[in-house]
Length: 112
Image (cartoon, rainbow, N blue to C red; front, side, top):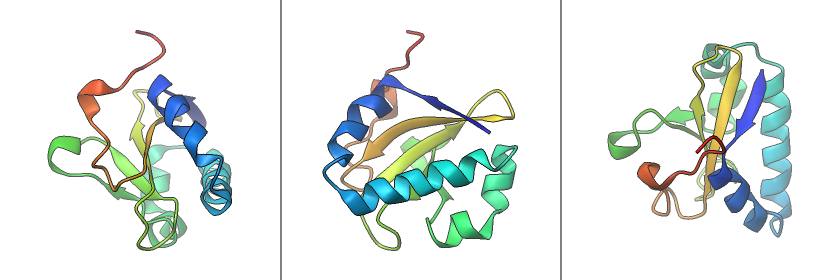
């Protein structure tokens, strides 16, 4: 599976470099994602849902999914969304305050 990055993700990931454990978890998630062929496979993978709390977001964030970068109970989340292409996933944003700092209408993509 290919990973596509947004401008918003690239801007927010810079701050994560000071947090070793979360950076390691992000790299582990990236590695695991590239071993899948489709977004549906990631949804069904018990490792992703159990260890990284991969889940669909609700309400105003519907259409987005998240991974917990701190594992079980932390507030730092990697927010992703499925791409139109079956073999791609889009890394959208890293939230440092349990989605309170994430607003879908302010996302910046590279093709804009």
